[in-house]
Length: 149
Image 1: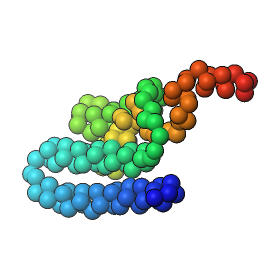
Image 2 (image 1 turned 90 degrees about the horizontal axis):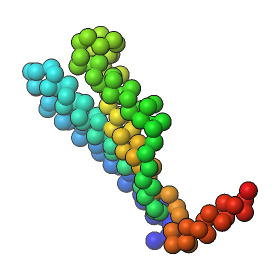
Image 3 (image 1 turned 90 degrees about the vertical axis):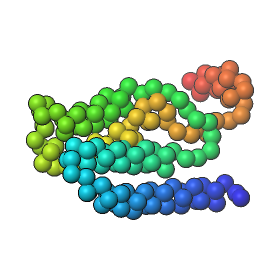
Image 4 (image 1 turned 120 degrees about the horizontal axis):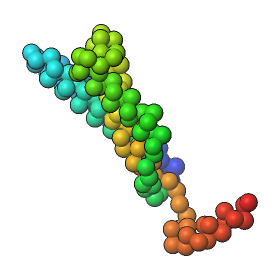
């Protein structure tokens, strides 16, 4: 299988995975709507939508190459912390914006998706293509950088 067909297959299965998850999530949320405790129902909903964010991360980060592990403070500050605050403000009555988030649940769902996507993205950036000589001879890679300057 050539590289172009393999990439097309990866994209198709990633899209299918996301669509299948949305359909399954709909049915699970319909079943969980029988939960009488509103806090427990909200927790189940947040967990499902959080998992959707993880699935989106996986679907957009498939590929060949070297897995790049890194810590990104900008993603932590711009995505993770606001999402954690929005979810916390939904449950904590005394926090600012509590009533706005309770009245508009889409904010809660977006925060859960952002948190599900943001947590793995804080620590890894997915796959990047790296030449074999850059892996085995890192000084060769540094020499190319000096030549470009």
